[in-house]
Length: 282
Image 1 (tube, rainbow, N blue to C red):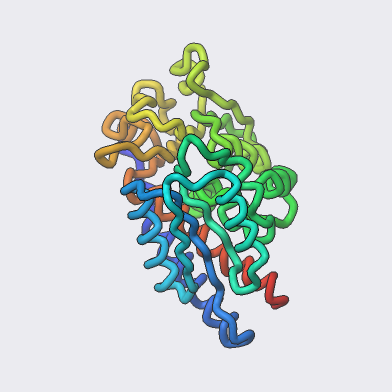
Image 2: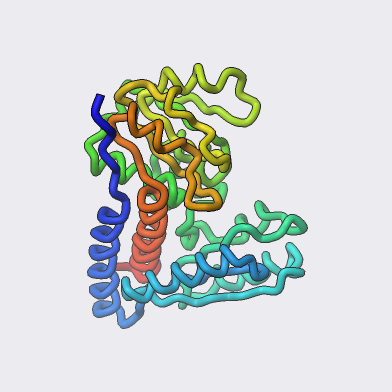
């Protein structure tokens, strides 16, 4: 069997951002107001600082204003909730992103729920999960949303396919399963306590690895011809899939980096402009 085709998230994301920039410019011309994304960062985790800076740069290129709200590491849940509620009430802010992680002493769920649903462009609130699951208007979790766009771009027909999601986080594993289910895939969730994980993965037509453990999914467990989405990112540019062995069996596979990551940011920017348009009544 020949090697899998690489699913190029970088190129697709670039096209989405270009279209988003066009929409942002049109919105700014019509309303006199540029879309604005507020990013809240708690502490100075090096990776988080880098991610926030990257997102600000992407915002600038897309004609989206960005506001960086940096809070000290010792910020309490109550203080963070207050900041997020204040941003939710600020008409000059159209989207809010709370950068992870926020520190173990903070109730992250309480913080997420302080974000107004109409500004939840990262798709992390209960309201966003519900509307996404029921197929109603709202914002999807950015990484799952980006994964579905990538599957669409490569004409992956999900109807009737067996999809296995390895991971059950509230902002990746669970929502991507719901989006796959909405496309008529038969979805199985796996996690750290799944027995005989390999045997479950071997039955999958589509594998989404999103568990945060380097090379957990082995090539020998990939069904020949399966589509493999690696949503993991671990130290050293290593995903949750053993790429070198999986590429020999899959039909399509995402590289790390350059696969899912760029799609996440593109989805975030696109949803920020959509949020601004709704709030500005355009």
